[in-house]
Length: 170
Image (cartoon, rainbow, N blue to C red; front, side, top):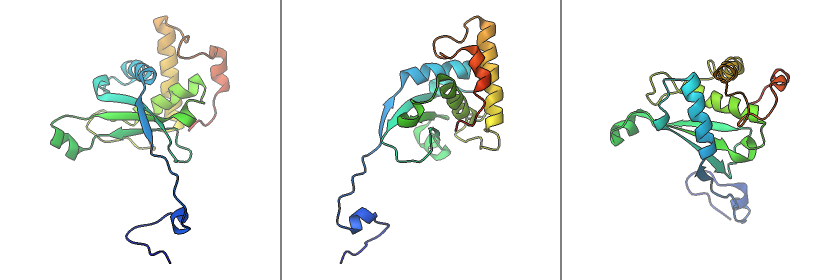
C-alpha cells in the first residue's frame, strides 16, 4: 500500500509508474521582443520597453493558453530596489501555429494587461477583451499604413484578409 505524505500525488505515482512530466523550458525571443517594442511604442506609450521581456516556453501542459503576462510584484520590487517589470511568455506549441495577424493580436492582448502605472499590477479581462483588442489592432494597422511602413514583414497576409479574420482568437 502506498501512503500519501503531504500534498497531492499523481495517479501515475499511485500506480507505481514514474511521472513523465517534463519541466517547462524558456528561451528569450528576439523576434517577439522587436514586435512588442514596436507595438508598445505605437499603442502603449506608458509601457517601458526596457522593462518588458519576451520569451517562448516549451513543455507547458496548460490547456488553451496561448500567452501569459507575468509581473514583478510590489514586494519583489521593494526587495530588488526596482520599479515594475513584466515578462510576456508565449506558449510555443500554440502561438507559433497562429497566423501573423493573430500573433500580433495576441501580443496586443498581453500588452493591454499592463496598467498605465506600470507598477506591477494587471488590467483584467473586463478591459482586455476581444472587442478592445480589435480596436487596438485596427489602430496599429492604421498607424502602420500612415507611417508608410505598410503591413509587410511581420504581417504577411494581405490587407484584404483583415476583414475576414474577425473570429475569436484566444
